[in-house]
Length: 361
Image (cartoon, rainbow, N blue to C red):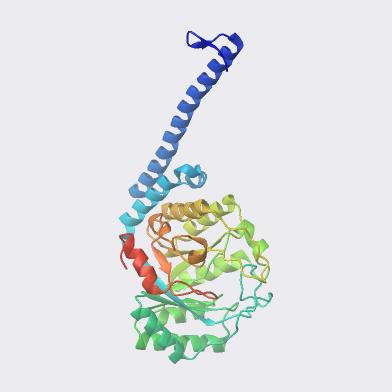
């Protein structure tokens, strides 16, 4: 132990070192406080840009994505305030019906329904209209506001498209729920027909950033997906698009994806969190951290203040709270009662969660 003399060590060298350390700590505290203020000011100014209608720049987006982890809570709070201001407290509730399952001709590396991979997932073709009507009625009774018909194929054949159109007519006549569709690539005439049938919204995901896309799919291009969205928009359909996070993409690529989504201005953004499917190339993919997931939802809200931002596949598996935090971090929609190839929460459980955090269904 050093001997103290009059409050100081009697060793001049040690005294000097202690002085240097104290000076460093003093300036470090000042620097940390200055950094903290700068980050909080960035979040506040970005939020004010949204409320004023000017929007944020790509530089702002990059800065928000790269804030230190300890400030993500402030980011989430700001995103939640934007959500409440533009969208109120109501949560958009959707259910899906995978009307054609497995054996898809595309090689999307995350997908358990691709014919390229042996995943052991069951296969079936289009159900009857009566079967879909029964499930749509159940969804409506359980509180779903929209019902999305999804098919695992590159694009519908003429015959299959006619069958889907008949299914939509029956659901419209006998159920009375908002019908949405995700049927792959569309022609202009097919998109117009869906609009005539009062389909509300068309889903076609970008899946990931353009710079990442060729790594996860080789059977079609990013521009193919953008073209389908353009066709749907020109036909008068609302758009739902988004992607999957946790594919091994970088944060920079998540930034790239959010900016692409913002340029499209969809009525709905659907964000999935990868659930690795055994038998696919991504079966051993490392789980994305909760911090990165929150950042994705929060910054997307800054970019698209009026859109529905929906927590989609992977919610129950990747999140400890089924989505409570994300519904208070920019999200305002969920898919309930299962997904394309996996089960999900029962609607009642999700509704209890929504009410618990003071939101509405």
